[in-house]
Each structure stands twice: as structure tokens, then as C-alpha cells.
Length: 328
Figure (cartoon, one colour):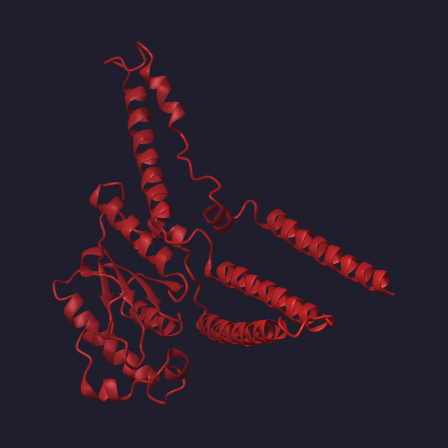
């Protein structure tokens, strides 16, 4: 009977491994050509086009009369410089994997550790021929293993709690964006939305209670909506989260007052910058984007920063470097 039990466990382990491999292979097949997959796994990080510049080093290629070659080299140099800045931005990101991938891997590792601990407890509890001298040590070991199992179960419960909160915020932001017919602009598309002659700003449109720490500094052209003249009655109307804020009766009124106060100080010189709007959960940014568009401004909704702080920060820095370098 023991060999049957061992065989069933071995078959179960093999099936589990094969299933995991099949899921991973399917994921790679479906996402190989996506931008997110390339950013996570480092595919395409090398700057393309550097080898093409060797052509212009040949004697006679860049003669004084060959205006076409000079023009082509100048344009290629600008494009390659943009790719270098983009590669630098990716390298500065704190994580190569998305928040969802990190949570999934952490959960799988935790569950694997729990399974190992449970197996060790079961194995120790089945040992019958234990000498009285070793019994206290075995009992203490079992106690510590059980304590570790309970601790890891608590950690798993905490992981599920935070994952649930983020999923709830993502569903709420998606529902709000769909209701308002807003399309989230991917971070990779932001450079194409910045016009050469126009100014731009990033607006942190998080509207909730106790949100006072700036996401980034003003040097990167990031402004906080709550940091521009929020009056006492507006602050009193704030809720503890964005999901609760949008359910408040005076939500649109408070958001409108904040936007008016923000524009009164930001557009005091008559400028009309391109606005990229985000918020911590991506929920209140939807209405703020709508209000800015009603004021005649070009506003783009770029979603949430929760779980994507590093990606958003480095994208904002990338836009600043490109603008200060004259590349956009």
C-alpha cells in the first residue's frame, strides 16, 4: 500500500509540474510580441539602429554636397537618441516585472513553503520509534513548524487582502472609465501625445482624505490637484478612499471646485498645456480628465499609479529628458 501512495503522490507532482509548464508556455506564446512582455523580460532592450550609423563613417558618404546623407544621419541620430533615453528609463525602473506578476510569484513561493512545512510536520508525526531523549526535541520542532505554518497562512491571507483591494480599485476605475467613455493612454504612447511647441503637465488627480505627499516634484512638471487651494469645506467632504469618494453626494461639485482652483493658479499666464491625468487608484482621475476637457484643454487619462509607481515615475522623467534635450 505504501508504494501505491508514493506512486499517486509522484503522479500528482508530475501533473502539477506539467500543468504549470503548459500555462507558462501558453503565456509566453500569447505575449511574446506585446510591449509589456518585452519590458518585463528585457526583450528588445538593446538600442536598435546603432549599426546603421557605421554606413555614414565610410569615406565619401558625407561629402559637403550630399545633403540627403546629412539629413538622413541627423534624423537617425535623433531617433536613436530617443531609443537611448527610453532604454535608460527602463533600466532605472525598480522592477522588471509588473505588480501582478510579483504578487503571483510571491503567492506561489509562499504556498510552496507551506506545502514543504506541512509535509515535514506529517512526516515527523508519523515517526513512532522515538527514544525518550529525543522526544522533547521532536515536540519542539513540531511546535515551531506549526507556528511557521500559521505565520505563512497569515501572510497568504494578507496577500489576498491587498490583491483584492487592488483588484477592486482596478475594476472601479475600469467601470468609471467605461461609463465616461474614457480610454486609458498607455505609458509608451505619452511621448506621441506631447506636441513640440506646447507645454505639458502631469496632474495627480487623487481626491481622498489624508493624501498630501506629492507623487513627484515640480521639476518633473507634476502637480497635485489637492495642493492648489483646497478649501475647508472641500477637505471636509473628502473620504478615506477614491472608491468611497466617487459615491459621495457632492463628489462632482468638490471635483469641479478643485479643478477650477487648480486651473486658476496653473493657467494664470494664459497657457494651455497638455494634461496627463492620473491618480493613486485611477478612479477620480476619470472625472478630472472630463472636467479638464470641458474647459477646452487637451487631457489624457493615464490610469492608476498604485502598483506601477516606478513605471509612471520613470516615464515622466523620460518625457522631461526628451523635452529638455529638444527631442520632442
